[in-house]
Length: 113
Image (cartoon, rainbow, N blue to C red; front, side, top):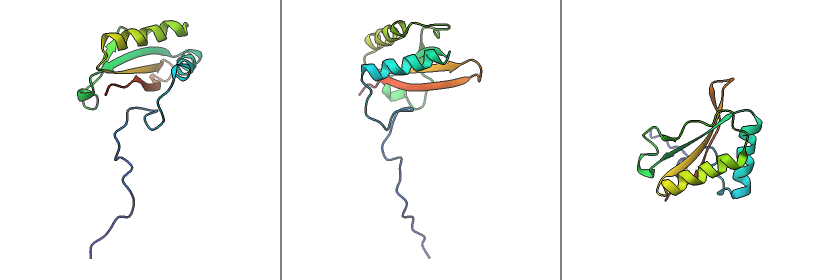
């Protein structure tokens, strides 16, 4: 007797990171996420990768993590600089939590198509 599965496949659309299922963030929403990372005392870091390698490679880090950074605009400027340097790459922002030794936040800011 054949068994049928009536449950749908929720992974039919490939998405990137935490906010991948939501509409794209505007500038004020991205700024709010950077502010959240800094307010929690996490170290912002930026990574980038070409879309063809985004799912099977470690992403390349843009500079070193910004340890102790408290200026939201400095992080936003670095995100823009990375995107300008690699316009055909995805650009991701990470908030490293030194207490838990893990990523407190991670999301793609610029998605290349």
